[in-house]
Image 1: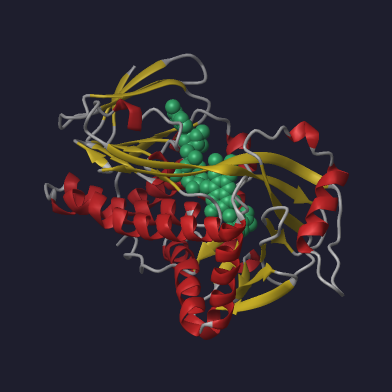
Image 2 (image 1 turned 30 degrees about the horizontal axis):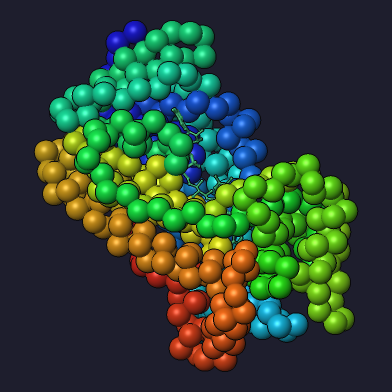
Length: 398
Ligand code: FAD
Ligand code: DHB
C-alpha cells in the first residue's frame, strides 16, 4: 500500500511519541511505527527522574495533568560513602529541583494523548520489517508491514529515527558518514521494582566497597532500587533474598533500616557511553538513544531524548516550509547538551562504582572526589546544576 505523510517516525519511545505530539501541535502530519505492542511499551521499566526543563516542556505541550498530580518533587539527593550519608541540596545551590515520575508514566500519557487526538491510526504498534530509504532525496521513504500483514510504503518529507540504540535508522546511514565514540563499562545495574514504600525521602547514591547501590522510587508505595553487578551476571543467581541482603549492606547506616517487600520486576542493564555524529543524514534525523546513550547514573537518558525532539520539532516545521537553517543546526545544538550529559554521566558513574580489579589508588581518588563534592560549595553546585539540567530547553510548539 502506497501512502504519504509529512514526517515518518520510527519508534514509540519517549522521543518518537513526544515528537509526533509536538508536530501535531504545529499542524504537521506524521506516521509513527513501533515494533512492540502498546502494553509492552507502557510496562518497560526504565528511567524515573525528570529535570525541570523536561517538566516545563511536557506542561507547555499540554501533557502534564497527571505529572503535576503524581510527580514527586525532590530538592536534592544523598551521597553515601565511608559509612556516612550527605545531603546535596539542589534548591539551595541552584534554585532548581527534579521530579520523580517514571518513564512508564510519561509513555502512557503520550500514547493516551496521541490516540485521543488522532484515533487508533496515530501509532502503528506491532509492525515488522521497518526500513528507511531514499534518505539523500527530498522524498525519503518509510516502509513497514503492519500487524495484519499489509506492507506499507510511506513517502515522507523527512524521517525521524527515534528507534533507540538497537534500531534500524542509524545503521541505514551509509558507511563513513558518521563518527562514533563508545565506552563500555566493566559493570551493569541489577534493578528491582518493589512493592514497598521508599525508606528515604530523597534518592540515595551509595559508594560501597561491594559496589554501587541506588535507592530510588516510583510512588509513595513503590520503590526502585539498583545494585552494581558484573555485566556477565545472570539474574538467576539473584533470588530476592540475596538482592535485599546486598542492598541492606550497601546502604547500611546506624539507626536506619531498609524496608523490603515483594519484588514486582527485576532485570540487568549494561552500562555504556555512546555518541554518534552528526545526528542528521539528508532527510533522516536521529533523536534520543538512536544517536546517543549514557550510563544511567545521573538519570540523563530520558531527559536527553525529550530535549532532542524539542529542538527537532521546530526544525522540521521550518524545513517543511522551505527553511533548512534550523535543521542544519539541529545536530550541533543537540550535541552540545549531549556531550555535557555524557561527561556528567561518566563522571558520576566512575566516581560512584567500584572498578573490578582496580587498585587502592583508584579507591582513594574516588573517596577524595566524594569528600570534595560534599564539602565544597563549588563542587556541590557543579553536581547540582548538571543533575537538575544544565542547558535551558528551547520552547516547544507554537
Ligand atoms: P527508546 O525508549 O529506546 O524507544 C525506542 C523505541 O523504538 C522502542 O519502543 C523500540 O521498541 C522501538 N523500535 C526499535 N526498533 C524499531 C524498528 N525497527 N521499528 C519500529 N520501532 C522500533 N535512563 C535513565 O535516565 N535512568 C534509568 O534508570 C534508565 N534505565 C534504563 C534501562 C534500560 C534497560 C534501557 C535500555 C535504558 C535505560 N535508561 C535509563 C535510558 C532511557 O530509558 C532512554 O534514554 C530513553 O528510553 C530514550 O528514549 P528513546 O525514545 O530515545 O528510545
Ligand atoms: C533512577 C535511575 C537513575 O539512573 C538515576 O540516576 C536516578 C533514578 C530511577 O530509575 O528512578
